[in-house]
Image (cartoon, rainbow, N blue to C red; front, side, top):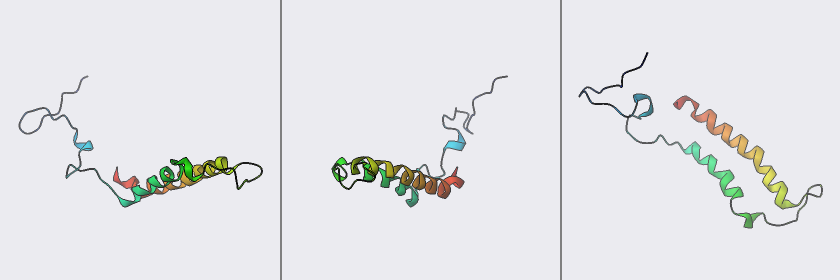
Length: 88
């Protein structure tokens, strides 16, 4: 059983399904989404963390700094998810 393409009231094929269109045609942006930039800013420029000291358990700063960003990134992603999950 095949479905027929949706037609608008003018009888022409509508290329964008109604579920993917927003009312104003704009992308829905919320300030909470800016939290996702924090891990990017913290890890993108290596000049901030390209050093050996201080060490933790013999591990140079370069490595533990990057590993520290994993739980921070997960936490921020979860916060953004919880704040925006009702928008789908």
